[in-house]
Amino acid sequence: MTKATETKIDLKKLDEIIIKNKGKQGEILNILEEAQKTIEHQFLPEAALNHIAVQTGVPLSKIYNIITFYSFFNLKPQGDHTITVCRGTACHTRGSKALLDDIGMLMGGSKELEDGEPSFTTPDNKFTIRTVACFGQCALAPVVAIDEVIHSHMTVTKLQKLVAIVAKGGKN
Ligand code: FES
Image (cartoon, rainbow, N blue to C red; front, side):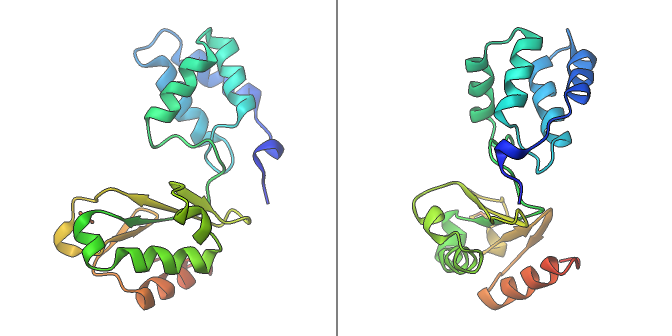
């Protein structure tokens, strides 16, 4: 299990990213995006953000504003696989709440999700469960994405089967 505080940051790599983007349009956004991709479990630990702030001269408060504005930035470690359950109206009326409840219970994160947390990552960092407002595929409701793959007309049974396949290293 990797906790945020245990994550090792490759400062050399981080400096390369900072130098590469220096003076370019969208400098800080690019640095943060590239940094997140290179850090284990795809997130931006505090130490990395402090280093970026010092090296770029961009105040830490501004960096946090950017990170919290864009949903693709993560402040917590992400799972190897991401299950995204659509919570839009069409999906809700076709049972997405039951899918979220079931997957939350299966992964042990139902409390976090019920409390309104936008995502939950299993302690072993294998899965992250998150929600989305709408995939734009309402006719296929309820919709769930596993990693980059969109699945339509999802059921609890189908979702459990897909999760079991992915957990064993298979393709969904
Ligand atoms: S409401 Fe789920 S895809 Fe639009």
